[in-house]
Length: 42
Image 1 (tube, rainbow, N blue to C red):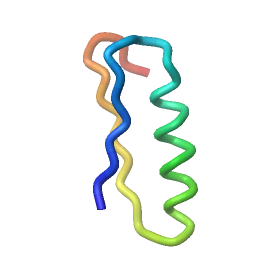
Image 2 (tube, rainbow, N blue to C red):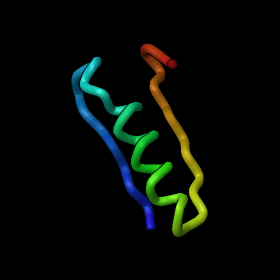
Image 3 (cartoon, one colour):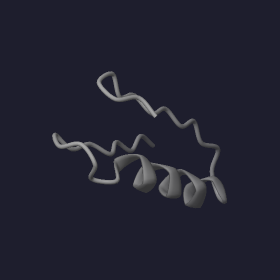
């Protein structure tokens, strides 16, 4: 399964949503988390 969290605007909480989603899914399945933001990396 692949899940993508995307938005054209900055500051919408993409990293927060993706992190919380990865934590929730990892309780049942193996997870690889990749955060790619070339303009403003965290």
